[in-house]
Image 1 (cartoon, rainbow, N blue to C red):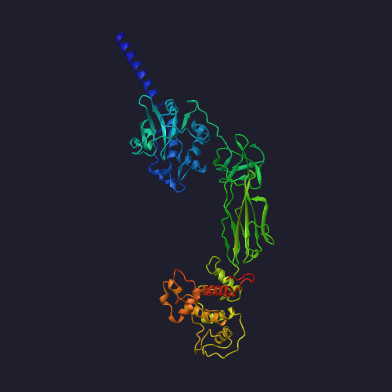
Image 2 (image 1 turned 60 degrees about the vertical axis):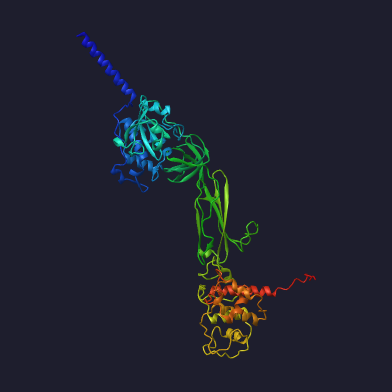
Length: 591
C-alpha cells in the first residue's frame, strides 16, 4: 500500500510538473482567449469606409480586436473600432495607419477592456524582426502584439521558446503567408516570420494591466503641421480652462510653431494668435511648410464679364493678404512705376484672411486693361511670400475673338485702324467667308478713303447707295476691279483672288510690284493649283509676306476668311511701311 501511495504521489507530482512546463512554454493568459475573427467572412463585406469594405481593408482593425480578445477575453465591437479609427483619420480606403492608430488605442479602449499599449518611443513602434528579444519576452510573459508584415497586419499571441515558434492570429488566412489552415490560427517558425509575405518588420505590444509592467509612452509633440481630427479650440493661454478665441473645425490644418509644454502648442488661425491643445484629436502630418501660393485663375478675363481670382491653399499657412489693381498700361515687372495711375479694385493687405478666392464684378473692370493680382502667403512664424499674376481682357468688343487666337493681334490692329468692323456690335465672325463687297471696302479704307470721280459703274447687280458703293467706284477707277457686267457683291473671295486685289491696290498706290523671285512658290506643295493668270500676283504676295501659307501649303482655291483678310491688311500695312523707310541722312554711302 505504501508503495502504491508513493507511486501515485510521484505520478501527481510529474503531472503537475508537466502542466507547469506546458503553461510556461505556451502563452499564459489571464483570461480565456477568444477565437480568431476573420475579415474574409462575408458579413464584413457590408461595411464600407471611403468606398472600400472592412473585408478588403480591415486587417489593422481585426488585428487589434483579435489581439485584445486573446489577451483579455473581451470582444471589442469591430464596426465601432473601425468607425472610431476612421473618424481620427487612422483608417480608410488605403487601410490602417499604424502610427496614427495604435498609440491612441489605450486612451480610447484601455480602461474599458483592461489593457495597456506600448508602441516604443513616441509614435514610431519598435521596427524590429521576429528575432527581437523584446517581442519574445513579452509574448512569453503573457502579452500579445500587433505586427506588420508586407501589406498586412497580424496579431501575435504567443511564443514557445522550446520550438522557437510564434502563435499567429491572421484575420485573412493566406497560403502565401503560411496561415491558410485553421482559419488563420497557426504556429509559425521564427524563420517563417522573417521571410517573404510573413516578414515581420514592426510590432506594437499590448499587455493586460500590470502583466507585464508597461506604461504608455508620452507622445513627443514637435513643431510642424497638424490636422485637427476633431473640433479644437484656440485659446488665449496654454490652459485648458482659458477662454476660447475661436473654434477650429475638424479637418483644418494648423501650423504649430512652438510647443509650449507637453500638451499645448502656439499657433495662428486667421486673425487670431493663441494655443491649441495637442491630444489624440491632433495628427501631425508633416514639417512646417514655407512657400508661396500659386494663383490658379485664368490669365485671360472673358469680355464684359467679371473675374474670380483664385489661389492654392498652402498647408500650415496662417492666412493670406491680397491686392488687385487695374493697370493703366501694359505690365512692366520690376518697374516701380508699373502701378502708376492704376485703379485699385480690392486691397486687403492690412489683415489676414482665410479665403483663397475673390470675385470682381464686371462693373468694376475695363475691357482691354490688365489686372495685377498680388497674394501674400502668411505663416505664423512671421515669414511671408508674395505671388503675382497678370490678367488681361480683350480690347476688342467681339465675344468670338479669343485673346489667344492666332489672328487676335491682326484683328485688333485692323479694327483700331478702322479698316474692319464686326458683323454685329459684339461679334466678328472670324471664320466667316470674306465677300467681294467687303473686299473692295477694305481696299478703299486701306487707301485712306480718297475722293473719286463718281464714274458710272457698268455692273448691273450694284445699287447706288450700297454700303460699298463709293469703295467700288474708287476701285473701279483705279483698276482694282475690272470692267464687267456683273460684280457679284456677295460672292466669296479665294486666297489667290485676294492676292490679285492687294497686288492691284499696291500698284494703284504707286508701289513697286515687281517680283524678284518667281521660284518662291515652288517651295509649297500645292503650287500646281494656282491659276496661271494669278501666278505673278501670288508670287508677289508670297515674296512680300502677305500670304505665308500653312503646313507648307498656300491653299489658293480656299475661300478667304474674315480673320485672314484682317491678317492680310495687317501684313499689307507692314509691307507699305517697310517700303516707305528712307535711309538715315547720316548714313554715308561707301564705294
